[in-house]
Length: 440
Image 1 (cartoon, rainbow, N blue to C red):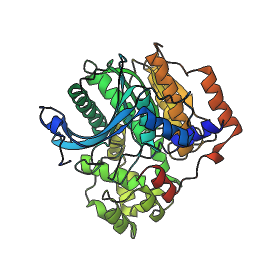
Image 2 (image 1 turned 45 degrees about the horizontal axis):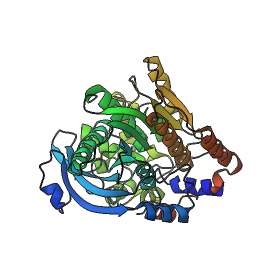
Image 3 (image 1 turned 120 degrees about the vertical axis):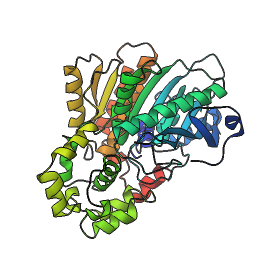
C-alpha cells in the first residue's frame, strides 16, 4: 500500500499543465513538419529502476520494459488565421531492442500560463508520459501554440488550434521516427487532463472527422475537461471560484481569435485588475503568481458596462463563441473513456455527464464514464484518472474491442488506497510545492 501511495504522489501533479539550434541529423533530412531538435536526454532501464526505487513506485502498476529518449522538438503548425508558425513539444521514444512494436500516444497537458518548460520526469505530467514510454508507447507531449519554445500567444481553450497543434506534432513525431527507423503499430491513443481533457476531445473529434485515413485512433480518455464551455463551465464565472485567473486568459485568447471586444482588451477590466492583466498575462508568470491577485468571483474583474454590453444585453455573440469551442456534440466511433471526480472544484464533473449523454444520444456505443472518486478535488482526481486511463489503454493494446477497466487485482489495490488512505496523502498544493513537483 505504501508503494501505491508513492505511485499516486508520482502522478499527483499531472494537472498542471522557435528554437535556433537544429539537430544536424534532423537538419540534413527534408521534413514537412519537424523543424528542429533542441535537446535530447536518455534514460536507461537501470536509471529508471533507480528512479522508481527511490520513489517506491510499484512495477506491477508501472512496469519498466524499456529505457527511453526524450527529444525536445520544434515543429510547424497553423495559427488561427492559417499562417504557418512554430510550436514545440517533447517526444518520449522507447529504446526498442527486440521485435516489440510500440504504439503512439499523445498527452495534452493542463493549464499553463508561463511559457517556460524543461525536461523533468520525476513528477507532474511528464512523469505520466515517462510511465507510458517505459511500457512501450511513443509519447507526444505538445506545448500547444504559444507555450514552450513556440511562437505567438497561447490560445487557451481554443478547440481548433489545440487540435491542430496535436495533429501537426504527431506528423512531426512520425518524421522523427522515420529518421530513427522506428516503426509503430499505428495505434494512436489520446488523453489529457483539465485543459488537456478539452484538447484531447477536440483532437479526437478533428481526427475522426477529417484525418481518419492518416491516423488510426485506437482509443481516447479525456480527463476532467471543460467540454461544455458554453453551458456547464461558463456558470463558474458568476460564482466563487478557486482559479479566477482563467477568465482573463480565456477572454484574451478569444479576443485574439474572434476579435470579440470593440474596446482595447486591457480597458475592459476594473482597476486594479486592468494593470494586473496587462502586466501578468505575457507568458512570464504562471497561475500561482496571478491567482492571489484576482477576486473570488471571476466576472467581478470586468467593468459593469462591459458586463452589461456583452453578457446582459447582447449575450448571443459570446454564447456563439463559447459554443464554437464546445467539443462534445459528435459520435465517437472508437472507445472513449471520460474520467471525472464529483468533488472537482475547478472543472464541474457534469461536463463529463453532458458529453456522455450527448454522445450516447448521437448513437455512440463506445463511450463510457469512469469516476476517480467522490471526494477528490481537481489535483487529487488527476492521480486516479491517470491510473484508470493507463489501465484502460493497456486493455485496448491487448485486444479488447471496447476497452476494460484493467486487471481486477490492480484495481482492487487502487480502490483500497482510496478507501483506506483518503486525500490527506496527496500533498496540498501551493506555489512552491507545485512548481517544485512540476519541475519549473
